[in-house]
Image (cartoon, rainbow, N blue to C red):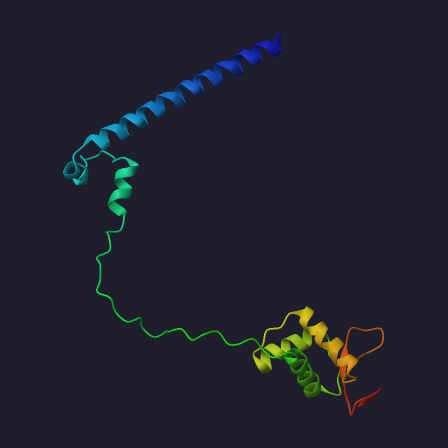
Length: 165
């Protein structure tokens, strides 16, 4: 019994919503018809005091005026410089190597390397790029990872560590 009463109530609410929507739609369409039937001079005139103009009239007033055709002229030189060309291959490894050299014989974590690159060279480098560069330097025997840590140090003369301890 309660379920049927709830169902009836829901149906009544839906019917009221549909009727209200239809009334609102009818009023909106009538407003559009009234506005469209006004002569252009009347539509540009100010609305009566206290009356709110339809949305389409508000948009028409705020729309930009049509552009006036201008005589053809030569395009101006670019004020914005072209973006710098892409760095050469191996640049990241060279930068990381320079940072490791500057802090040698001390070892550094990738975070410290990244901070030094940003501070000293003005270069923002992703951790993935730093890790890849460290792998390249390790393959060239220029850098080595300290055992069981995430720190790296510069290796001078192609294989002999500066400070082994």
